[in-house]
Amino acid sequence: MGTVVVEATKGATKALKDHLGYVGRQPGTVVRDSDAWYTPGAIIERVRAVLGTIDLDPFSSRAANETVRAAYYFDPTFSALDRPWRSPQQRRRYPGGVNVWMNPPYSIPLITQAIAAFVRAVQAGEVAQAIVLVNNATETRWFQRLCRVSTAVCFPGFRIAFTAPDGKAVAGNTRGQAFVYVPGTRNTTVAFLRAFADVGVLMTLEGGRHGEAE
Image (cartoon, rainbow, N blue to C red):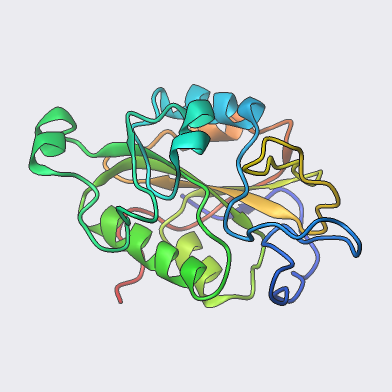
């Protein structure tokens, strides 16, 4: 697929310091775990409309999955960084790979490790298709690597109002995000572009399933 730039975006901001959280935090607001920011339900429903089902959320928790409703998920005690993303039983249930929603941890080095694990899973045929939500840190190696296995990205025209583990909305998001569509054994890029057309700037990318090897 050729590269089509719908609209250019300005340069990405620098990485935040400790305790600011991956979405940023205004001075004076409550400090919360920078790796525990949950996605609003309205976004999850939009993701589900593209993927059909969410089979796996590889960086999640029991509380987060009450909204995501993935068929199965990994959490810090059963880490996606340490194992294949499909067990033998799940390979039988999902022979073509799993539909993945991924809102990974954003602290360093976890974000780098999470994207590396995701790319390996895509290249191993574990993933049917995926939508990944990350900061729009376009200058970073992990963002570049993610884009190399992607076919489309949406830069929202607003800052996402994330939810904290205590159920409260996270105020003062100072960072922009990106939704990245990654085909694996399936490719519904067109469905992604249609579903996210009113969210923000859309770009198609010359990525794809194989991307860059390690």
